[in-house]
Image (tube, rainbow, N blue to C red; front, side, top):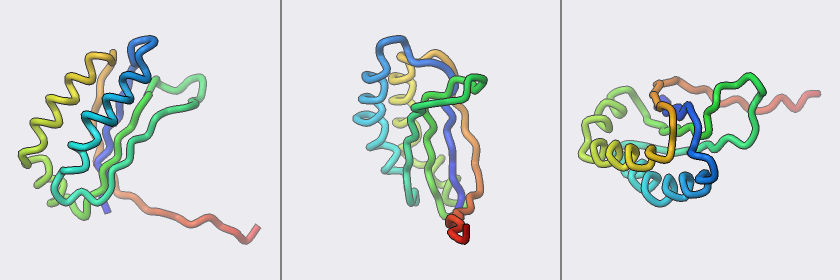
Length: 113
């Protein structure tokens, strides 16, 4: 499985954090779930970070079965719509967002101890 990750590095306009995340939920999440061949979508909201961490209030993870599936999703009709909607929500955000494609492995906890 491959995960396309979007890192939102920066800060949300002070006092508008709830509005930002409400808009993510109502405007962006429905589009992200419509990407062809996406198998899971996770929106991670930072609740605590190390003192020296870069400010990253949100991370988006979208799982796909293959690189070909990611490439097809990036060529789909939903991408320009999702990108435009993201730019609108990002008006509440000072910073940048960028993407990584990562291969993931899930591990079960070691219960032997």
